[in-house]
Length: 396
Ligand SMILES: *Cc1c(COP(=O)(O)O)cnc(C)c1O
Image 1 (cartoon, rainbow, N blue to C red):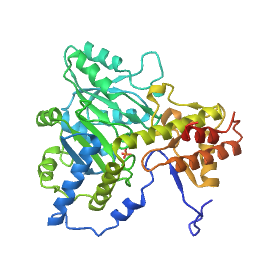
Image 2 (cartoon, protein in one colour):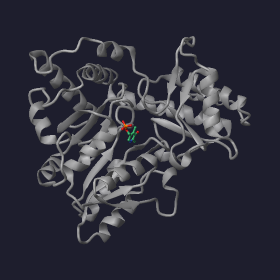
Image 3 (tube, helix red, strand yellow):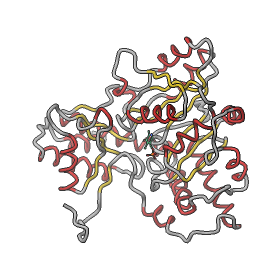
Image 4 (spheres, rainbow, N blue to C red):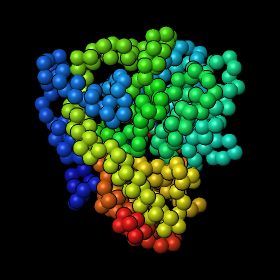
């Protein structure tokens, strides 16, 4: 085991699906001296990061950046657009969707939950027709918003958000569309404006390659208008004061200056590579990862091929094998961190993150660690997943 006074040789392989590895370029930017957040230099930084984040969300509308985690940004999205007793329709894709539901309930909202009709909601993407069905039955128009998770980090499932918007529109229901893309943004294709999302929610420590500490809301004109009539109490999370101060690149309270240095760098990196190339890279890494799992003879948690995530892959272990014991062995022997099974998947699966600053060789290293660890734990593997992943990456 790691001793406090010892340092393991080589690097640590952080392959959990967030926080993701922070590139050196971003770490260096974060280490610059903190400046006066009301001084003349700061406004330029503020304008630069707001502009950069808009590009990443693919929106021209308002974006709010909070010092806070993704959970704070969930709360912000709800308190700015709802009144006490409002009903929200939430689709259960997995553990994170369930946590967001609990947060809504704590805020005093009525939650109606949608699950996959006749299937396991934790193994497939969102069924947009099931959402439309609920909305059609809501003739009293009590449902104020539809809340969905774009990339469900507990299972490795990415849903078709444009299809959810089309399904809502087809019913003529006025519900707002709120989307958690905390782990999707910056790795999986995401288009706030084109897909007609009202509030998009994200965080810094996943596809944006930053340390934890920032939360984001991208806000449609409709959501901004709805916030003027929404009655839930809010102070720190209130959009109006922040958006007003942001017009000149400032914040009403002290922003996370050093994380904003890192954010400016992250936006430049994503722009430099080009978002289409970033998304294609993650799709290719995900295909290679799934090829490895298939070669091992193991199952991927998401069983719908069209919804399998470019961000992470959930690997289901055979019955009788404790996935957390395998993870612990891999960490101890190879200094590789994998994501634990969450909620009802605890002990049943582990998650391989291939989001953010990941390339072919970092994925290969993670898969090699997994393969050696699985064998060491006595899991019978059908074939080498490492070879299968290499062949996928080489286009064989
Ligand atoms: C990480 C994550 C969250 C929670 O974000 P925190 O920054 O941990 O508060 C919520 N939803 C999804 C999909 C996530 O991946």
